[in-house]
Length: 413
Image (cartoon, rainbow, N blue to C red):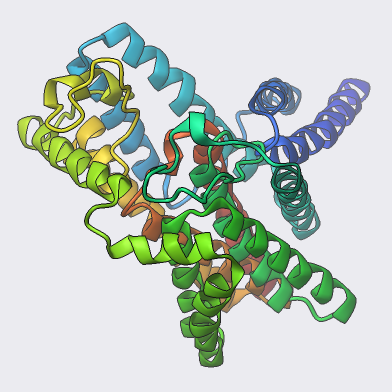
């Protein structure tokens, strides 16, 4: 019996060791390859089940957000019954929501120490460096984007290049870079060693330069939201960066100036399309405010509310507004629960920052809070979480907030 106990304990620790490495791989490959990320996530789920079998118990760590997460899962699932193609909606629901919740609880239940938490963040930032490097490669070697319809060719005739790196779309890359700028800046401010601080702020500059090359106007505004968070919660002198950032954008390239100036241009086709999509999406919400049109059903339902495009060959994947899109697909109650989770994790991150004894952990928690605030601002004009990788990144950062909060709480006792 003693041998059996020792054997199970050894198996448990072996599985835990490999599971933590699987999670590091998930964090690293997340912006690089969805297929590889999904492979390691699946292996991690198997290892977690093995750990619980070896321990002879479920071993599920409770969090303050469990009820809200369960509500979001239930409300999103109920929306499937309102979808025009229920089986397609159900497939998207369990295939996507399943992986988001699995990732969230895998991290929370299997990362408990500060060292593994630090390794997770290093994996994410190293991956961000590779993504940025590939973005620079695209810019240097050139790529004609006219076929992608990312830019109004008549309004921006000189804009022939928008980098997108491994994330398929410049706006997705821009959203990723804003979040990574926030996290890297937090780690840089929370690092005492000058060598590591220089590396982290060097990464921030590289991420920022790549962000300029995406020509994503909404993301440039999101950077200002990130700066504002650091100005409020870290040092008010950081607000001076709000003047430096626009100045740097204007000095970068003539095409950058044109893109910035077009934000307030009512004839810009991108802005016009967004306004039209918002009108259509509001009509969807008014028709089905409680249950929504169905998880992942926006592209199927949009043609019935097409007041602007009126082209059967054009596929509209999302509303270009996170809040309207979520309210349309899973109903207003679903949006409310999502916002509760989103800003609940921000509040927990700021609470963990106050509790943390370690300077790096305080910086990390502030960085993740700033990243989520940046996402909230970008959500006004875009919805980057229609992309699986970006949605997984959101849930990963939320999970790391819970881990950081637990680490900070233990350090106070």
